[in-house]
Length: 330
Image 1 (cartoon, rainbow, N blue to C red):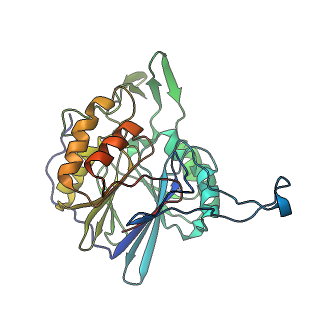
Image 2 (cartoon, rainbow, N blue to C red):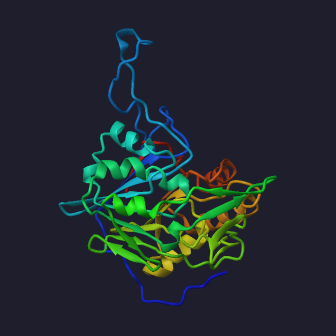
Image 3 (tube, one colour):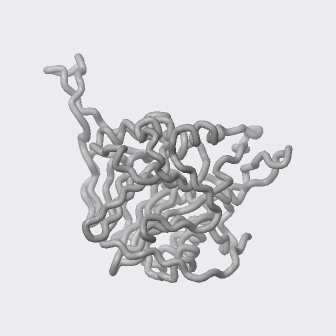
């Protein structure tokens, strides 16, 4: 367990509203009904040619993959700020879904990376190519660049792809490496930096190692795992996570401690509760969420169906399943 020393509250400046659009997730659902604070985008995109169809037209549907990416649009007065959080698994999946959704990458003013795993970073290839050499800030933790390997059940350790510092820095973005919290855009967006680990039951990634000092060492903390926090006026905190390797309860508690804001309005992203290592903690996590009573819970990506069921049972009014193209107006 890692406890970060007490600090003064860093309270994000309140925004009037925020829109969270899922650019990439593990599922796509064109028939998902609209919820109170969410709508699913169906049949997005243009009508490219296909000889299979009469008149040779088809819908250019959104594509899902095992990855995560979201567009955050913060509004205060007449000002709208657009931030891309994570970039998905495949080189061009996020780029192509942005095109299908009518999102111009040139409108993105900053990038925030939740952590360095390949299912959140590989899509930078297409995104950075479209951004051009505009010097936009890209906020990440120093451990983002870690060389890592995983031991899956019944296998030996498997080394996973590592983000290329040389490629990213040569692309034209302005890399900001920070382990401490970072405020962006007049304080409207707070990136947590390394998260305080205070629960005694959220395991991190016990099957992960990192190459440091010429040897493989334990890396279960995934110290680069960080969340994005937005303070919506009159509502409370919106918490955006990538995988939630820090522990989703740890993340929420740290968000409250860091900002001094107790009210949790929404939690959107991966909670990493899928698989034998994580399923034993699902009930405790679900009970904690019930006690927090957020207005909106959107468990995505690596949360797993068992955890989604448990969260739905505790919070049927707040729970909303995610899908590529889903937009949440908060």
